[in-house]
Image 1 (cartoon, rainbow, N blue to C red):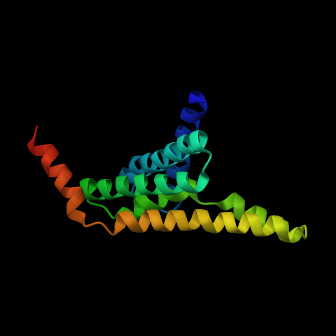
Image 2: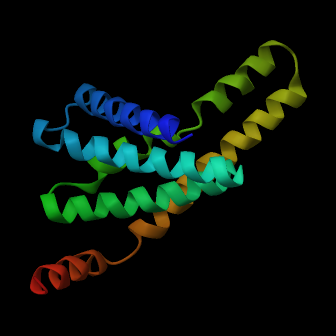
Length: 152
């Protein structure tokens, strides 16, 4: 399991970097975008393997990656949206949406409904997790860094 986790974290890094390149993120920000994607996928994969709760794993991964994005935003003086979009990209429920559409085409409406509801749950977990951290005042993230720098 640990090899699989490390492999998937590395692949999530490159996946998010490639996405950021396509959408013209500044070259110096690409490693931070990749780190955000790695953090989100690593937390999601670990929690989902242990508890088998994909909605909970998505929510906790979104909260963590949004906090990391706010931190990068303050440290690197760049918009957090750039890191946030790349960070939540591995969590987007694309397979559930695809399966829902496939269920419609196969005339299996029960399967379609189940996949569609799961996609909505995962999307809601991403939205709620993002809103919770983004609604926190920016001073929370700056206070930690100022205390950390002054203690050294």
